[in-house]
Every structure is written in structure tokens, then in C-alpha cells.
Image 1: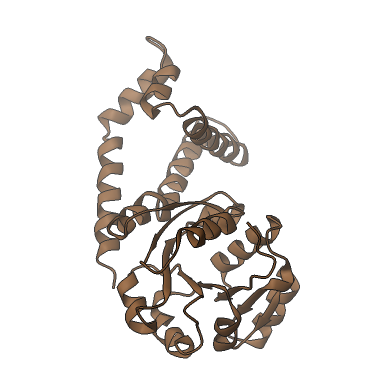
Image 2: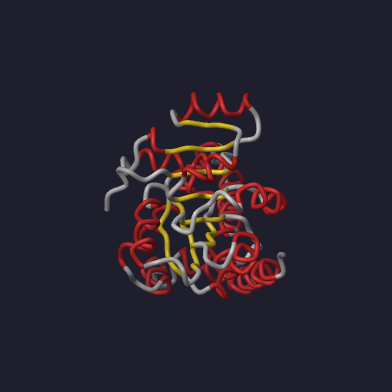
Length: 270
């Protein structure tokens, strides 16, 4: 798919917005001259221009007017103000993608018009290292070729899957928020390794690489996680002793409850 004549706009260029732009640039799908971002201050604009090599301004309306695909990469509390600024600037052909948590498609249609092409997205922080997972839901104005275009555009920083909007709370819990759970797991394993005598820097490397490799096995082998777990658990071996302890201490139920609470909290955001 060609992006040669497409202008990709970003309103907001913080950690997530910058990560998305970097991934798009590294994918070589879009040239830097065709990415246009808006930030709050001139100082920030100069900084982002120098770091990313794109055009940056302080005018949200200008970016909205020129963009074929427009990412709204701002926090939810600023969204009302942003939409008020751009509502008369975005055309019906512009694909608008928001990453703000808790704002549903109906909210954007009320603010911008029911004739606009709206995509609601939930990326996660591993997008910063080009290993993100993002769920998107779409309104009825977005065409299949536009969905495919967005998915291809985002490949540089994240895998992307379309989900019905009622599952966006689940997306938040299982990918948007879950890096925090994984970081806690890595930290706990590393602490235990330090207790066992391993230097902390080395402990983090062992624990993190083990998690990375295990996740890759799930994705690449397509085997059930339980089957992969059983492959590690030799009869009367060390691993099954550890698994028994995790079961006794309620690891599964703790994760289950945490994800359930996160879904509940996400669905309650407005």
C-alpha cells in the first residue's frame, strides 16, 4: 500500500506519540516530510523537530486540516479542548485515530460529527521498543482499505487487531495495562535471584530475557501456554516444585482478579 501522498498528522507528541512516529519512520512507509505534528510550546516543537526530523508546529487546527490520517495522542482530560479546536478543520475523508483512554466512539461522533471516520485505539508502552500490541475499534464510516492502511502504518511499532468496542476494556487490561504486571513479575524474579547471590544487573537480564523468550515461544509455536509449561516441568524436577508453590500462593487467581479489576476500572472511565 502506498503512503506516498499521505500526510500523517499527530496532535500530541509525548512518549507514546514520539514512539509511534519513530516506528512509522523506521518502517520506511512514510517519509519524514509527510509527518506533521502539533505540540504545546515552541521549545517542544524545536526539540521534536531535531529528534524526529519531522515538521512540528504549535497549531492543532493546521495539523488537522492538512492530515489524511490524524492521530490524537493527547491525554483524555485535554480532549474536549482539542476537539473544539479542530472540529471545523477535519474533513470527512480524514481518518481520525484517538489513543485516549475512556473516550468511546460516540463521544467523538458527538464532538466532530457522525459523518467522520473515527478509530478508537489502545496502544501499550512496548510500542516504545517496537513491540507493541494495539486494539482498535472503528465506526461505520471507516472502510476496509482504510483499516488495512492503518494496520500497515502501525506495524513499525505495534501489532494491531480490530475488536468490537465492548471489548476495549479487555484490551486495556490484557495489553494496555499488563506491561505493569509483567514488570512486577520480572522485578520479583530478579529480587529472588539477588537473594540467591546473583548481582542485580545480571538478575534483571536473566529474568527479562526469560520472559521475552517465553512470550516469543507462545507466539511462534502457536502451542497452548499450558503445553509449553508442561514441557519445562520434568517429573520430580525443580520446575514442578516452583509451579506447585505458585499455585499454592494463588498466582493464577491473583492475575485473574487483577485483570478483572482493570477491566472494571477501564469500563468505568468517562
